[in-house]
Image 1 (tube, rainbow, N blue to C red):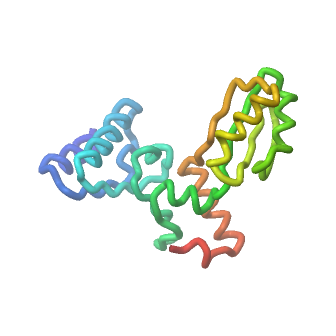
Image 2: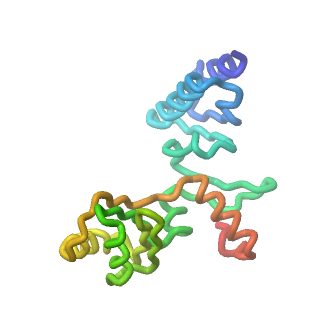
Length: 176
């Protein structure tokens, strides 16, 4: 109840800037969803909401800008799309087919940088522009696809990728 009261007091005067630290901590799932919906509505109304959270799934879809902070220092910042392009330059697509063994032929198509199959196939393409023509070529080759799903990394995956880059000594390349 205290968390809900604190949030109500924070938004009561319709601020242009709202600073929230772990806004859903200690809330039940329904209340947490209501808080996240309120944050989304405020952002859509042109308000600036700065949310600090360790629960990156909560920020998924809400964040226009992301800053990864470690020991008080910003490691990287940008829009989720910018960070995805920067840390995941290849386009990853999941393919599935009626006959999954047919998927192995995809590894030999032009523009395929990496191929892995564990049930469905995970394919890395040199660019997302290559996807439409690859699908057409795969279908023309007689592979009966049942799923083609480009994957976008989550904020959590981006976070761990940034942390890995730091640990591997690519510190100067990560800082913005």
